Amino acid sequence: MAKTAWPRPRGTNPLTTSDSEDNSGSSGGPAIKVGSRGSALALIQDHVVINRLKANSPALNFEVDTVRTRGDVDQTSRLAGMGLGIFVKELEQELLDGKLDIAVHSLKDMPTQLTDGLVLGAVLAREDPRDVLVNRHNCPLDGLPPGAKIGTSSPRRAAQLKKYAPQVEVVSIRGNVETRLRKAQGEEADGAILAAAGMIRLGLQDQVAEYLSTSQFVPPPGQGILAVEARADDHRMLELLSAINDADTRYEATAERAFLEKLGGGCSIPVGAYAQCVEDIMVMTIYMSTEDGEKNFTTKVRGLKRDPLQLAGDAYLALVEQGGADLVAAARANQG
Image (cartoon, rainbow, N blue to C red; front, top):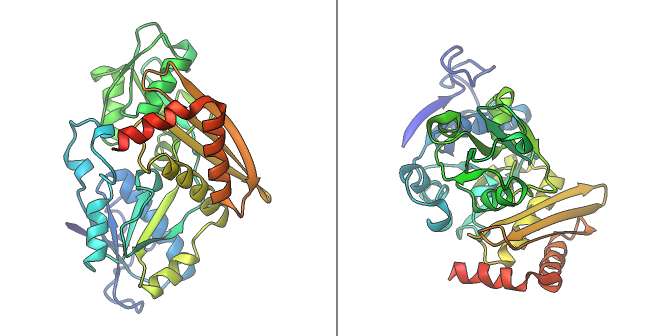
């Protein structure tokens, strides 16, 4: 586990925009240990959380500890076949062992059932939830030439590509954002589908050829949301985290993840769920498909935002009642 003091001295890391002082002489007590994966995006996400916490409590000190997860180590296996929590389990163990105080995750990487003794202390206001297309032709999806190779490791994105861009060939690519961008410039593919949130946080919007509509490319549960995990009995940390929690995003995340839980909690077939709060109402779009994209289902449900579990139940019933029962059966079989 590599350790990095936060804030860093000015000029040593492009992620640091302020707070260049060393922690050793400050009066905020022992440093809060923040667990993170080691990619550039993960470290930026830590920076977002730390800055939010320091905005409320400027005297706090932080130390970022990077941890390699199974998903980081194994770069060859198919993600859909690697099981649940491949990007979070090692971080959760460090939390349980008391080596970390909090862990910062992309919520879409987290299983719907948290490890005993851990809770989501905060979910931050959602970044852009859409998928984006990048490609060496710098053209929109419908402008891609026949046979263009578009990379993704996501069964959902692959199925949506087969439906909305049948002229392209879907190929599997893995790696962090920078690696996938390199592979998508002709090394292994002609383009790729990625999450808008990661591109925005990395400042790479200029490489986006098209932001894809959430009505067609329905995002997975939790896309664009940063989650901060903590021990359930660490009351001081939970109080600090409550100040940066975004209530509407929490409602949305709860509805999306509850819907996924009804499908088995870690669906390896194509599935999307995207909820939006509008005043007191929440609208959720759900999507499921066979892996080949031949049979798919999309619908919207709405309800009170303060009852996200009811909305998830309504979404599940809509899926079953409107012809998706076999898709649900396939999802549950894949969990077995």
